[in-house]
Length: 130
Image (cartoon, rainbow, N blue to C red; front, top):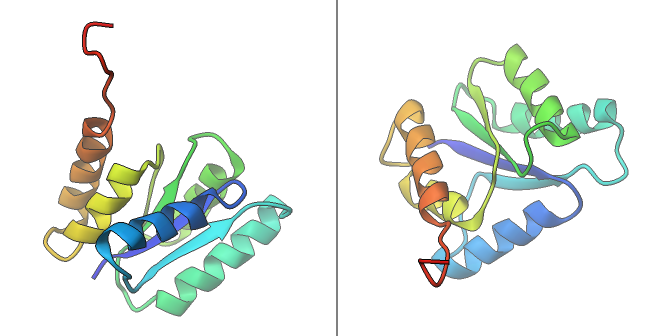
């Protein structure tokens, strides 16, 4: 199974995980972590604790909301040190639901591509000719 960590500013990640659980039911091996009130150094320590707890050569995807923010930079630093971690930005609910429902079916590389596609597929405009 591929682990997931939702690392965001404030409590956004916790809200995403709780909402996803309400839609698809509870799931194991997905955590949320907030950067609120933490220095990048402290955030890295907390992220590493979660990774080490789950670290049994399983793959882990760290989801961040915004490329370029502290969660992104911290997650990328941790991923550089651990080849079993990937980081994906642009977190949205379709992406997280796709992860929870497809992580047992696909290898990491295929899953990451599907997550990107499903995240974009969830974006639409109504009416379509606006």
